[in-house]
Length: 200
Figure 1 (tube, rainbow, N blue to C red):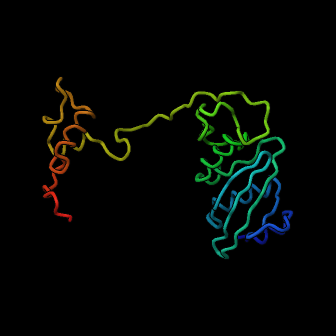
Figure 2 (figure 1 turned 180 degrees about the vertical axis):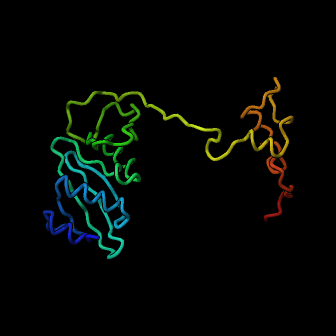
């Protein structure tokens, strides 16, 4: 597996950059670095932008070497890191929101920070071709019965409290469940009652 030193030999080293070396690479080497992240040989320490440049800080897991890899983006487009390494997706969305630099084939291109409250698009860029507002935020659909790891209705079936967790119309609703569990949160899930002050 190539080390960061191998990559640094192929890129253009920026002098007087500390505490870690910084190299400017082309799109091919940028994609190579993203592939190393995907394979687990390197770890992503950071991903950020400037008006026409993206930077990626990585650490080599074997040698503990750290380097900053930079890619110039005169066309404001760069190869996506998150396409190979999913933890980078929110960082790439942030770079787009702040600088207007777009990752190619970004798996999720929705805004991350910009929700039309700034009064300007790409506030840290020098772009003058941007619209004043972004498109409305598109929420992704949730699938399946269980949401956020819990299904309150199923829990009620298990502890047989459905008759006490209903609204005035006799329906089991999230609000009725919350109200019932707020009144008696410990006993409602079938756990033994805890005396007040027993943890003092």
